[in-house]
Length: 113
Length: 115
Image 1 (cartoon, rainbow over the protein chains, first blue to last red):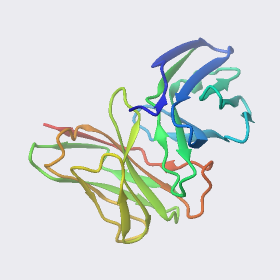
Image 2 (spheres, rainbow over the protein chains, first blue to last red):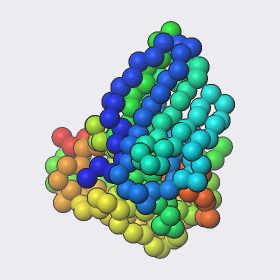
Image 3 (cartoon, each protein chain N blue to C red):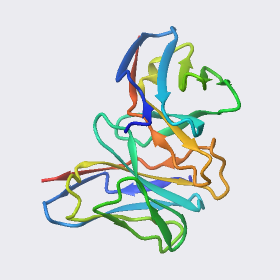
């Protein structure tokens, strides 16, 4: 039972264009959402987060959008750069106190120069 | 520089053997976690510990054991009871009182291969 889904295993985008990575979830109790970026043979690094009381959070080139009614969130990267090429994971957590995160399967982004 | 150190980076194990993966952090974080990553799957939680001498099972704890004798260390033992131990193992930590939007700090992982 995959509670957090990233249905696109890979995405290729031209340098300078927008990258849009999508994530869907099924558990309506989730109210915190995070995006991580992972390079090969390295651990994930935290990128950006959003709580369910907001529908948008922006940090530089990265913006996360949350659509609670659709149980959908997306990460926008504008403009995309070759260094953004990595695997991106979304993660979700409910207000359980321990903040255990459920991770999606990841989307491999390739930014073409 | 503070961070999480996982060792070794690559580990080979014969079937039927136990093996212990090391995770050390110097971030003064209270909580530590072990995740497993398999191809085509997200990270799955094996065990977590919020304080020294206490830990809880995650979603896939069968065949694994942990200890938390020191705040800095959270070793994971993959026992012979684990049916599919070949995977990429990630250790993470978070500070006490961290908010749910702060995220974890991850180590660089250990790739375990059963031969």
